[in-house]
Length: 163
Image (cartoon, rainbow, N blue to C red; front, side, top):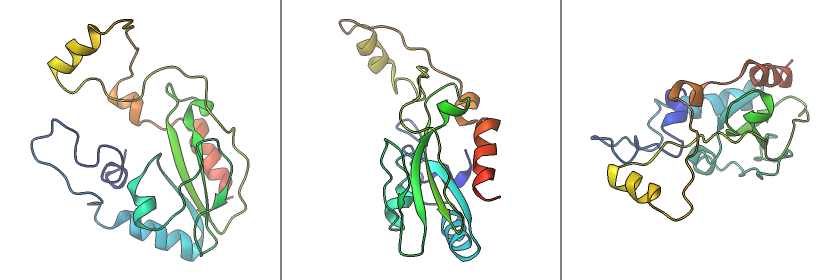
């Protein structure tokens, strides 16, 4: 995940156990530049689902069910697509902003992948409480590298948007 995504995503502060909290949107203006660039010259921006950058810059929150919706007054459209449809081990919902090109159809809705994308418990106490809960079943989680990776098949779909 690039530094622009990290500072806008769910764990923008660095997470609950980080010693020195980060600032929301502290990405050296990369999202702002990317948005200006795509609005000016055309292109695509891919960001984690629930990215705070969309709200901050006034972009429409796309529906989780999929489909393209109007994103802004600059001709941009956005959508939510799960990378699990394109080879990711987890569902990994992603928001896409597109401007200057014709939108294409993705595979919309929930993917079948069952692997958890989220991080595990944030403390030993929380882990113990979870394991002792009635009906607890262990959930397979993926590594940080696997979590952050973008499948080649999905990268190719993003490239097709602008070619």
